[in-house]
Each structure stands twice: as C-alpha cells, then as structure tokens.
Image 1: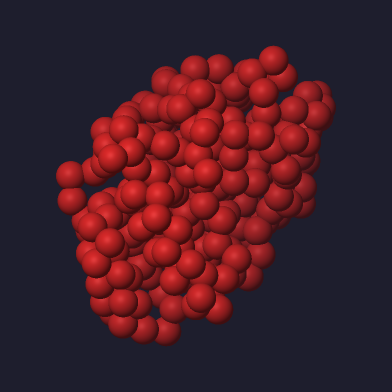
Image 2: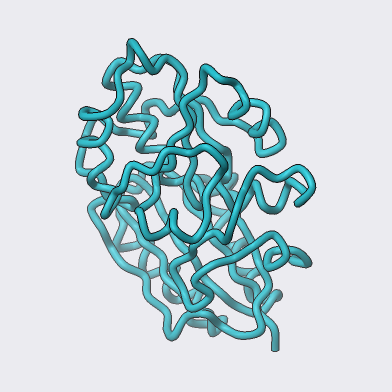
Length: 240
C-alpha cells in the first residue's frame, strides 16, 4: 500500500521529554509507522511514514496537544516506507547548534512565504546563503546562493563570525530543507548584530510544492535524509 512521508518540526517548551517520547512512540507503533522523531526541551523534529489513514490519525493526535496545535507538515507520497524502522529519541536539541543565544523560542528572522521568495532573492542588496551541509548543496540549490561549505550545521556560527559582517551584509536571506535550521541560524545572527535576516518559510520543500517549475529559481534535487536521498516538485505532488 502506498504511504505518506511527512516532515515536521515545532519549537515549543517541553517540560517532560520522556513522557512525550512514551506517548508518541506508542501512538506511532500502534499505527505501524516508521521514521524518526527527535524530542528535546525545545520541541520536536521528525520525518515519519505511514498509510494515509495512519498519518491523518497520528497528526490529529499530535495537534490535540496545545503545544503542537499549529504544527505544519511537508508531505510526499511514496510507494513504500523509506525508513527501515521506528525511532523516537531524546536529545539536548532538536537541531544541534550548542549556542544558547540561538533560541528560536525568543526570536527568529523574518519568514518569507514561498510565493514571495523569488522577489526577495532577486533584490541585488540581498545576500543569499544556503545553511545546509556541502553534500546537500551538491544535489541542488537556489540560483546565486552562497555555499558556506559546512560539514555540519554546528559550523554555522564559525562561518557567520568569519565571513559575514552586519555592517556590510545588511540584508541576508537563508534557506534549508524544511525550515528548522534557519530558525536557529537566524536567531544566532540576530543575537550577533544582524538586523535584517530573512528565511524561507517551510524551507525548500514548501517552495517546491508552492512554486511551479516555470517560475522556479531552484535547480536540482532537494536532498533528504532517507532512502529517497532527493526529491523534486514532481515527487511531492499528489499528496492529500
């Protein structure tokens, strides 16, 4: 039976991560779903797969929790589960940066709707930076984007400190796969003197879903961390 692959995250205060882990693990296992969810005191981050009915009922259960009532998912159809098993893990952070000043619960950059993204990055005063790892960028990127050559996201602060200047780079736009890395990347920059920091709402996956090929500034495939390895706009069409 075909399945739905759903990616999501939500920064929210989680007082008891272990209790949330137990509840989500039981709900996922009951529905024979697969994939990985990370839980930390700052929120949740996951990519999971299941039948359309299993996905609908699980997400309804998740959104019944007031902390995750407005969680947004990026969904794509697949012929089978792209994950070998189910994992729900406890972590210090749902996306690791290890810089306490980069706190999305306090402030983040300005969200840009996918339909407004092309106009923003066409502005010659905007510096466009990809926050993903170098091997992800090799699979695909936006036209004109800077590749910081990151081996892992934890190198982002060093890149900003070394290569960017809040006086010279007054408008910075950034993007990532689903949006989560940009939350912390923009929070870090705002904490270090950058005033105008923008990021693509919902990330590349949301852009591919919203913007037709005839208008797209995206080139290549969007790397994803499962057996699919990369997706295009055609791969995410047809999901209900």
